[in-house]
Image (cartoon, rainbow, N blue to C red; front, side, top):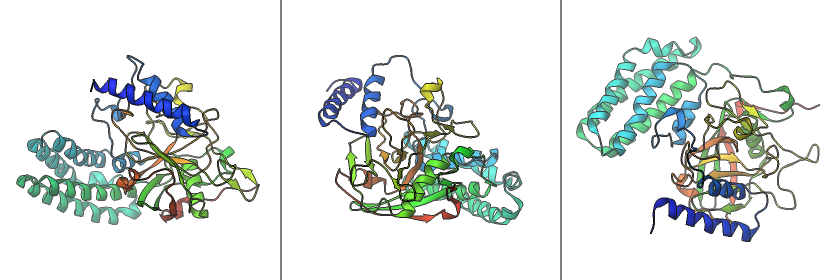
Length: 383
């Protein structure tokens, strides 16, 4: 069968042939495949893994990425999260129960000092935080008992539930929106926080969280279109195995949203927040800036990453078309692909990931609804 690299090159060659034959127009797939094809021939140039982790340990869970993307600065809660996140890594490494026990013990030590965690919570929310900390303390104590039985499924299930509570606690720490969106984009909708979207398709339901803390214009544009019912009834126009599922192209000659107030095509700028920066970059790719060793706050390292599609020639013409990345560790390795910094990721699928693999071109979105977070939506200013 050949080495993994040989198989990858053969697979990419086949996909390139399909690409040329079908003459794709205005699709992220064309650039994605070209990029991947070229990247496999580049020797000695790779991006570092997310958050400085060694190769193979990049964060590939969308929920974890969303937790880490929250604009907070409280080391104890981050330590608590890290200890619980690490359990799954240890479980994959031949069920290293001693290491799992160590992670649980470290988490309990953090929870034994609740005052340190509460330092990161605004005063008016501390009562809520105290309740969550108590819940976590009970839960981690229970997890310690489950670990002693070496029941893998129960350990992972309890860990997942505890991390959801950690996420709630971390969200209480966000006091205000962390930066000012440039005034030049005030004519565009914005999301100053997060929103949860339920997408009903003919193949099943998908839930995604879109993140305005990292991409307020991109997430705001998406929420606005969902609110308008724009996506209801639209087809999935592209479904490439191990690559992407794409939708958002309306019927007719237009490739995006036409604002009924102006009768003009509404486009949004490329918007990407560099990990460690305080506000996003607009209208420029990482490559153009020479940021070859940087990663975005929301990377393409999780199955179900949600990003805006755009044409190859104009990085600022994204409008309504978006895609889900069907993450494959060989074809688009976390921290080692050049999709990061080229397209704007604005959220992740948190439920219904299995549905993505079932979708084919021609399948439809039955409806899209904002089920949480509309209070964070900011209408565009009108002149």
